[in-house]
Image 1 (spheres, rainbow over the protein chains, first blue to last red):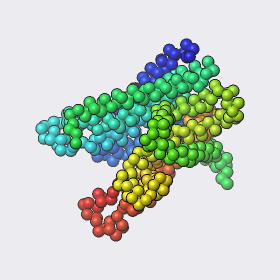
Image 2 (cartoon, chains in turn orange, blue):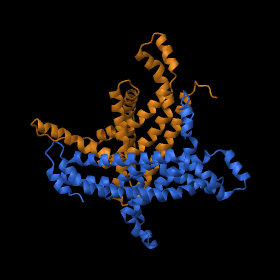
Image 3 (cartoon, rainbow over the protein chains, first blue to last red):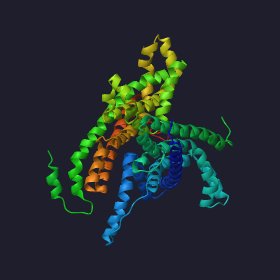
Image 4 (cartoon, each protein chain N blue to C red):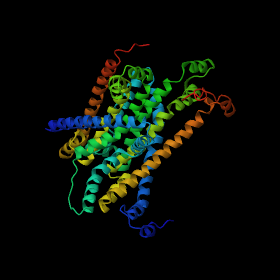
Length: 227
Length: 263
């Protein structure tokens, strides 16, 4: 049925997952930084974080990818030209895709982490400080383990949306699942078959992720008494 | 009418080429018009369909709820870009069957395929939002309505749906913003929406920043206008849940903020 394109499609699936995981990593780091800035006492940090989430929420993902992919080389070239160098820069679509998707979902992760930090019991932190833990140690031992538990449902949702957003990177020619399906569809003249296969594989990722998230939530809440 | 050309020539030289922005604005605004048009058409059709779909989804008969469940699962679980490709390019595989049915003229058209995909997509998401909202209507109110002799469509029209719409509003405002931004994908199937216009202009002028960032700012402005509009509607629809102004003044103590119920 796939006329020998099965292995390319599978390789594309692998690439989609790889891009997804890398972007998730970027998003988590950005989210932690962003929520830390939003909850900080410095008005400058709060303003910067608000600007970040506002811009990301207001601009379409596709446009963001185009700006990063086509804009960054131009920016570097313009700066180089300013200093009298004539260089040509090509941006790797993988790096561009991971950075952009990571930055976009970092803004959503910021809100998730912010909610999770606010849900923490203040008394526990005070107790930790009273026991003589420093700020960093209290953050690592007391806050972070609990933040994961509060943030897990939100982050799970984020992952499900993020993995679908990686399909947009096919626009800048990264050979992930949708790009390979597109190439196969053009070569075999069976577009419906190949795009349907791609759709089913995305559904499979969603299904497996949902199962895994359900497990993870149960595991994270194992020490909590239920009402 | 503003003479954009003259305005562009009058601008001083700067590192950011302001003249390019001003010159391209009329075309960009035309693109924005298509973006808004696609959003509004898909939202209107999608929302109308989703009311019926949500009711079917909540029925006890597997024959009724299972197809809706499958539809919602498929459209929420796959990327919109795949759905667009599946309908626009995928229909080509059934070209002769569609020709026999006389439907090929529609599926050949990128505009029709874009509206169809966006409509199906938003219908699926809205069905899920409405399902949650309908289930959140307190059972006592439905019982009371039944005791008053209401049933069937009257019960839905007077009691369940008005309440459900109010519950659904915050989630639906997010869906509207999501769809508005998702219309940028139609530029991939050759339509000249705001993103499509921006891409064409960039390939002609190579002013990547000026044009893409202007387009981004236009999207940003409309997004926050939509969110502001929904906040006003939310405020209006929850009027009966707020304290009266004079009462709020009386309550202005430590509990004043808590006394206002959240929707």
